[in-house]
Amino acid sequence: MTQNAGQDSLSPEIELSVIIPARNEEASLPACLTSLVSQSELGFELGRHWELIVVNDASTDQTRAIASNFAAKHAGLIVLDAPPLDASSRGGFTGKTNACWAAAQIARGAWLLFTDADTIHETNDLSRSIREAERHHVELLSYSPRQIVAGFAQRALMPLVFSELASVYRMKEVNDPERRIAAANGQFLLVKSETYFAVGGHRAVGGDVLEDVALARNFKRNRHPIRFRYAPEAVATRMYRSTSDMIEGWTKNLALLFPQPLYLAGWRVLDFLLFFGLPALALGVPWLVSWQRGALLLIWARTLWRFYSRVARSNFPAFDVGLSILGIPLFVYLLIRSTMQHRLRRSVEWKGRSYKTSR
Image (cartoon, rainbow, N blue to C red; front, side):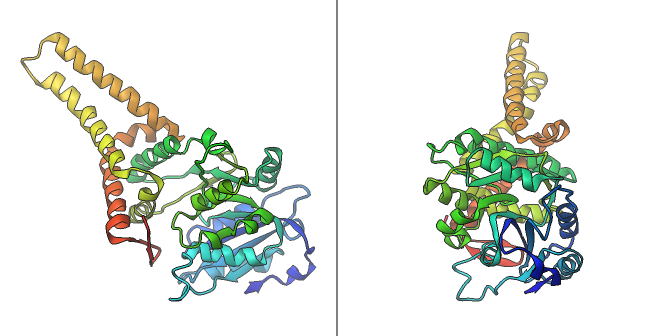
């Protein structure tokens, strides 16, 4: 472990520990760390009231060097090397859960914030999130960030994915302690330290590829209240920097996120066929009479309204929502691909590692 020399001057108890697991994140980490260390929060100073722990997860790029350079300039920033995932431990942890659990062991905050290296934090989001958790009397608070996308494939696909997530994981139900459904987003996951360790933390969900949702379920199962919401004013993220990364990432997650992925794929195929097929029939079949053409166009209009009303729940810009109909073939492909990986191969690939799955 490497830490700043100023660490010795830190108080033994602090309010918050921010933990960033990072594996080959040289493209994203500088912006993330800059957004965190530059927060001008009056009375909430890095190195005095909160600490920042970057966990280098066996990176082969400049991730560790970037983190170390920041640590040399900022008291309270610690660089930690994650324990190796050898043959004996691989079954108990994924790379991310292993890194998060290692950092939690040395964290001194009353609250722990797990956040990804591809996030960008708005000013004051750290202290405000703690106040929000305390105000709502919850022990786990998670934000769904504003998504930064680039390129046609991301703009067309991502609204579809997030609209379906909004439909399956309705935030009102997630936040209701009487409902079993639970959800969280590992890009911003704030937990009360005492409760986190009481339910086993990331060790208890160590082998889960979808560790954020598993952790939220563990909290809720043990009767610890949680809160989950869309928070564009607090944090943004660019999840994927290439189409291949996006395909690998959603292949890992889609079959776990949705209870009936193949059923969902079938419905989206129907949307696609109706969207393009109905106007083709109405305008291209010469023997239809006017009322039949009108009926087909009315059904088409209803299909448009139903589809775009659903996709609007994604909180993406209107242009991206408009493009989403063209993302259906890729979405369907990924749903099928993810299902095949989880149910037939029983393994998924992520960042150069292979993980066994039980789905």
